[in-house]
Image (cartoon, rainbow, N blue to C red):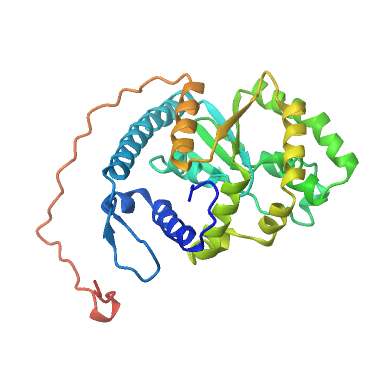
Length: 309
């Protein structure tokens, strides 16, 4: 059975459980990259194909290399005071969150912040549309990754009928000037659209349904968006046509393979920032000062967390 078109239920379940393991934190996966879970009740078995292990090893080596470059870029942002906005848009389950996690994984969260805004409150709905996003823009030496952004109006709000035709048109009149204004103020904007095929989105939704740790990711809105695939496609095409600007172009990340998408996106992001390595002084750990009258008070046993493991 080809992976792209799963028909046999048992084979699909095997792939779902393999995917669940793939999705766990990178360090945990490193410790168990020789294993896969074939079914909910089956014992762990060694991987049958050396190529699986080799591919994972290559992926991790390249990911860690790119994350090392992200740390250099992070240092340069702080040193130079550069301000960076990264817009991440795409269909539900397209891999935005996974890429954002790998970008920020090794960085100082005070410098690399993620803005994932909830639905606007009743008060925010009466504000200028861009107003609630402005509060999250970066100061000097910061980067902000928008996990969905002001482009909600061009996508989900349009498709789901959450905005009027007049509001939709006003958005397209305003967004070029809004982004140009940010760029003139010294903020660099990099915009990514994560693209996945219809069949892959369905598969990832199935994974979420079968994974109790990820069911929270599958909202009623996601299920509704699944039915409106073609309307989202049309909305995306209009968005590209009207907001692919010379100053802030769209970049499309092919997301059918999540690991490749992560590497390709990070590699491209690094190419967009003209950073240089910042030299740091050698760090010397000072010796601890000992005082003859220092006495450490014992901790009451009832305060100690039981050592179960």
